[in-house]
Length: 135
Image (tube, rainbow, N blue to C red; front, side):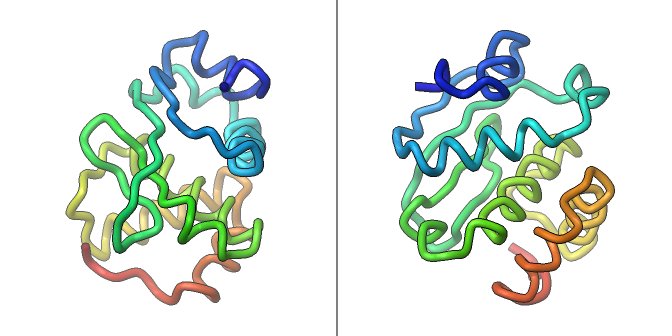
């Protein structure tokens, strides 16, 4: 339940996060930490979205109004990499990127996430999972 996580709760109250079905407390903590680091000035420009757990071949993706995370895949990665992935996917949502992101959109997401203060995590993510690929 996101009521135990102050940044997630604030985004929910503001209508940015509509629903979150994540039950894993460790991952909710990482989500909360990532959301708390996104510059406040961008909250009003964020489109509303849901955060859902899913099972798929990718660890995370944006699908319509949803940002989806495969907790099993992400749980095998270091926390720094997980936060990089969370920030990267939130930026995709912020920029209006869809399911079929190309190399340009992947680079844009990495660059903006780094500009928002996630540079170390994006570098760790790329070191762990490799360079961007088209979906």
